[in-house]
Amino acid sequence: MTASVEIENLSISFGTVKVLPSVSFSVAPGECFGLVGESGSGKSTVLRCVSMLTDFWSGTVRIGGKDVRSLPLAERCRLLQMVFQDPYGSLHPRQSVRTVLAEPLRIHGLGDREARMRQALVDVGLPVDFLDRFPHQLSGGQRQRVAIARALILEPAVLLLDEPTSALDVSVQAEILNLLARLREMRGFTYIMVTHDLAVVDHMCDRFAVMQSGEVTEILPRSAIAGNGATHPYARELIGASLEYEGQR
Image (cartoon, rainbow, N blue to C red; front, top):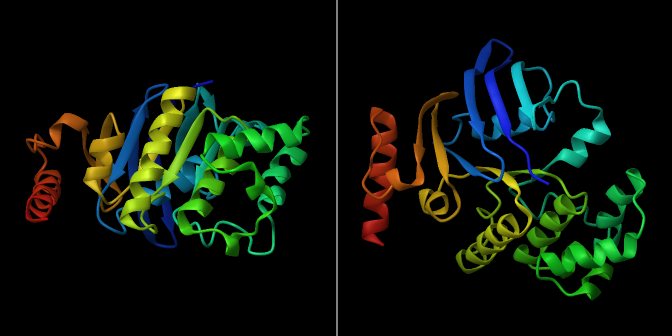
């Protein structure tokens, strides 16, 4: 199952501060689309609006041609899921992995729960006996794999990835990114990935949008990174700084 994402004139204000003036972009079915920019540029806010975790925005968001505002909650949860940045904060410390994975299955009335939970762990590269572990018994990378398993267990079409590796050690980051790339290849997921790291974009994304002060300054193919093919001054500056940093490592 896969789906497109279309965002038109997405706008949101917090009090008198307009965080997203008007954001528009589209993501093809099965594409990995990146959102990059400095902290506070509105990247994560876009994901929160698309997922309806924040619902007082204006504009249009369609998933697979369906307006997210008109979708029943259960259908929306089956269609899209989100993986959060902090694996230490996204799992309840007093709930076992079994409880974490069983809850969405119970809410949506899905059968074969034990088989589904076991398969979800296998899909993210964890042993099935981890079902009876608690978050404090897991490493950061293992926790994030559980969070990904939780997102996958309802078999969504779209995954929203909010810096899913930034809280992890460098060696673990590569493992999680490779896992996400493999899952997309296997299942045909559509990804929208927020990241600060253009090396992650280069590894994962087909295209990416550069955001500044809540606005999309430019949408570029992944190939634009290596030769800094951006035309907008801010996008050129951002890519140039990343290339300079990578060259000094």
